Length: 234
Image (cartoon, one colour):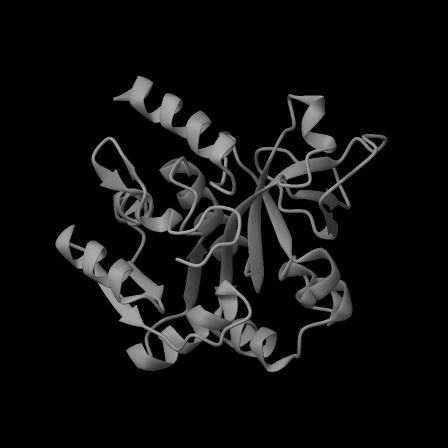
């Protein structure tokens, strides 16, 4: 609720439904496992419950979403969980087929940590610091799962294997535990990118190709763009 660029954004409504509820319903539609919203805010919890979702209330001191979902995982106390999918609560355009694809790649490749990225069609995005980019060690294709070399907010568009990073992660339970046991790295703090903590501690991140690009709601401009897209689809 305290997002600096767009305060209260999880509860902003598009087509009569809050952004956070759009996201958890996408997760449910993917149908790959139990869906739980982890939040520190009672207002978000109330909204999610009113829309038929499950919630775990967490403490309010977490530096990143990954640290928050680890607390939620501990509170759930389910020993049968092998993989944890972390969807960012401000990505209502995330595609359910891409969610399933990441899940399948994690299982097929027995990866510890994976994420999604899409091809950058608009070259202006290379300069947009609100759009996170990922550099991979191989060209992304439909059926491969290459490693991420680096994540950045701004690029010069010289490499062929730079992609738009989407706000989704999938962890093996033990890798999630290892991730949160490390303190925030200087690189992570400087760039405000939690995934850099993994790379800085030699935790490998694999990247699957998303067929659909997704926009996170970070600014008023993002909100207007997403509203137009979702209203047109409805």
